[in-house]
Length: 220
Image 1 (cartoon, rainbow, N blue to C red):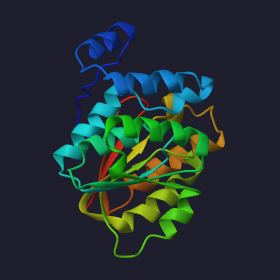
Image 2 (image 1 turned 120 degrees about the horizontal axis):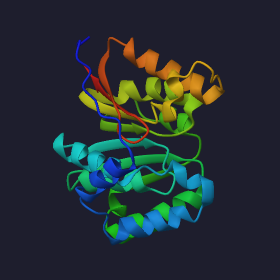
Image 3 (image 1 turned 60 degrees about the horizontal axis):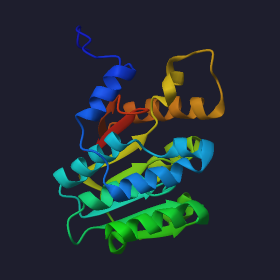
Image 4 (image 1 turned 135 degrees about the vertical axis):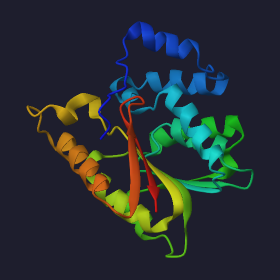
């Protein structure tokens, strides 16, 4: 590993500066953020606006035409991916909640991307198992129950194109991953997932300190 550790710990002032130099959310994104805030503690599951922009840029940069997402919530990440897809691109997104995804569908319709998104409500592993073997994706995103991350990864990887990208959210888990005094199931699962991916010779990966940790995985 490099002998020079180059990183910057953010504080509130630096984060505000970061936001002030980032394209602001549009009216549709702002409304979705506000509606999600009304859900109380569950709002923490929504990705941040800078992460959404990053995901749009990334989707567009690789010219993605097909994408799949595990964990829709209120639809911000699906909206971000759909905005980055090519005009004929399609996204399959999986969730178990009718209520949360109803909010998502309203936002997608308002943004004019609903025709690019196919919502499948039900257990994601069941949805992934039902995919025909020859179906492939340029981009995948995992942001659902942490205990199933490895299962989602293993189910998605065979459907990822060579050179395709798989993104996994919350891989720093609010810093719990390095705190040996914390041993709850979700924290153990994120640690296990990170170790599993790091040891996988089928892929290469980088864990970025975006929001709560975002791992970018490229299939060899």
